[in-house]
View (cartoon, rainbow, N blue to C red):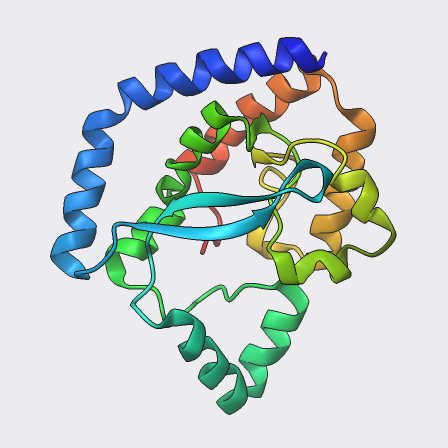
Length: 202
């Protein structure tokens, strides 16, 4: 299973990177025109076996977003509650307009195809968690981090931002238990309508 999955990841990610190259250029230009700065956002994430890797995304937030988040949560109790529950904000004021479109269509995550090709990610797997979220994984940590995280997964096809962080963790643990090549294909096919017809994506 592991070898078959890796070969599949390499074939699909390399083909997708070549096919989507014109789209990458268009997205990069749109970001530069609306928010001058870095095109890519690079963040350390937890990989298989607790290995830390650089996760690539198209930048969707204004510069200084981490400091801005601290200010927002300090001034707005409602946003703090939402962040504590979901570890994300559905209507994040730090996201610029083009970035909002990229997030809604999941285009901001396309650079992670490079992570798949490198072997940091798989096409399907648990969510790649941030370093400071490790303690929040609780008893599921060792199970979730026993396999490669994924570009998409059970969480992305089961409600995404409409679910709580704890529900996300439980879904990722459930994926590890059900992990198989055919289950991956099922999730990949379920991901397509989630991208084409997003619901409350942020």
